[in-house]
Image 1 (cartoon, rainbow, N blue to C red):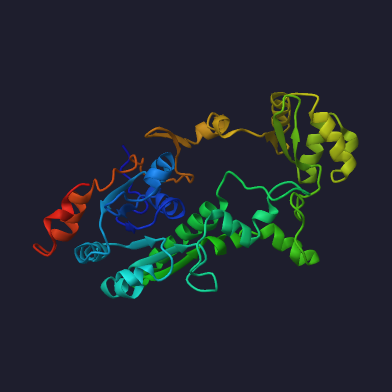
Image 2 (tube, rainbow, N blue to C red; image 1 turned 135 degrees about the vertical axis):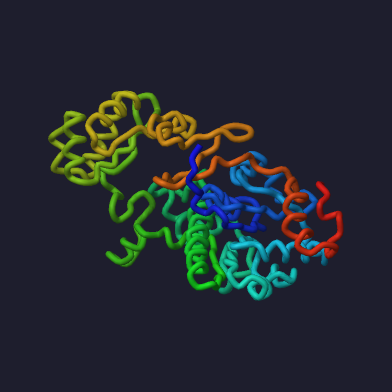
Length: 380
């Protein structure tokens, strides 16, 4: 067993968030070794437990659950004592909710000056939409991401991947939390992290920004500034209905691709509709497996388009240890590898309130005997 410490060993995160963006954010912190305490309502907890049990299981691995009703005086008192021991608070309520509960940023900061308070919302803490309801699809729509998804000339395509939740919200929020934790260790003062799905999603519009800077407007779907309209950077259907992704953007890769498919006549023209039509016809003459083997050997940035269940079995995914077991089936492992640092293997998602006795007694009642009623350690 490794004797190396986890990178975030000793960092305690109190997580009030629900459903997907916030829990995925705290999952990333748990994967780096932080202790994540999931605070849930006693009656049912995070409604992800009932709405999407498999998703709940995946994004809440490695965490511990306690139940507190912040609308009750005893629940709020317990929560504040827990905050005294924390490095990070993560919440995903609409702006103003925590203040109304009596545990807003200024209140918590006065108790714990080093606390990093992260609020992950749909639209942020200010602006005309601050109080509006929002989901991943809304953030994609307003940010411009949705307009850029799908085929040219067709309606925008909604991806099966919740890009705004995961990339726009959770990833940006997690990186900001880490930056603030580092800052707090040096200065002794925490920070308020105002992260939103909309801001994070808009920040992903790099290719659209390139086009706007170049000619004043974004390009149609499937036709971005760097790759759109190029035969050498496209997806092609094969004889068996499978697909191959050709990413031979640089001249050396395009030349290697043309040599591999025995079409040296195409080297001089990797962007025209004529060349694209030639490749459409060519790829339909062989199966996906044929083209994948041929082009992989050519090292020209071309490969098969895999389904997720196929990706799980790909030798590179397997070699990197990206699939691990969790309750109910497979789960993705930590996406980043480290040398001379450990990442923990995460336990299954917690049962509702399973850590009440351990955490609420150890952190709260033992610190202030008699202040809180015994019912706080009861399991739902």
